[in-house]
Length: 302
Image (cartoon, rainbow, N blue to C red; front, side, top):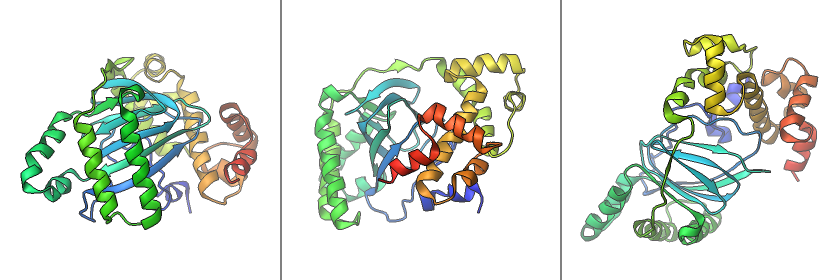
C-alpha cells in the first residue's frame, strides 16, 4: 500500500490540502448532510482555495489562524464561526498550538429548502440569500449561541449515530434561524493579495503530487512558469516561508496523519513521506513539532 492509498479520504478522513474541489457525499438526500469533528496538528501547511458541494458551518473549538472566504480574510480564534455556502472558494490557515480544532455542520441547501414547510420557504430562502459569499462571526458577536447548538447536535449524534434523527433536524432548523439574525463581522483584504496566492497554486499542487520524491525549487518554479529567483520571492510573500521549508512542513504534516491513523513504523513513514533518511525525518519532525515522531505517537494515543 502506498502513501496515497493511505490518504484515501473514505478510510482516513484526511484530505489533500491542495484539492480545489472537496465534495461531500450527499447521496442520503437529508438536509443535514454530515457532522465533522476535525482536529489539526502542527506543523500546519498552507491550505489551497477550494469549494464544497454543500454549505459548511464551522465552529472553532480551539486554536487560531486565518480564514479566507470569497477573497476576504479574517483572523479566527476559539469561538469563531464561519459559514461557507456551496461553491464558494475559501481556505483556512491554522496557527494554533498545540492543535487547531473545528467542528462542521454540513447542510444540503436544496434538501433543506425542500424540507421546509411551504409557508416558511420564503424566509428560508432569505437566510441563504443573506450570505451568498459566506460570513464570519467573531467570538464576541453572539457566536456562542451557534456554538451551543452545534455542541448539542454533536452530543445527540454521539447517542443516535444517525443523521436521520428528529432532534438533529430540529437542531439544524434552530441553527439556520440563528444565522439569520447574527451580526456580520467586517472582513479584511487577504494579506499578499489573491493574485500572488493563485500564482503559486501550481507549485503547491506539484508538492502534493510529488512529496514522496525529491523536490527541487527549480521544479516548483517551472510548474508556475517562473524563473527560480522570482518564484522564491513570490512564494515567500504568499506563504511566509521559503519553498523548501514548505516542502518539509508538508511532509511532516502528512507523516503526522500517518502516525495517528496507521501502525506503520516510524522508519516506514519516513520513507513514505519523502525523507531520504530516518535521521533527516527525525530532525525535521522535532524542529516543527517539538518532539520525536515516536514520542508524538505515544502522546497522541494516550
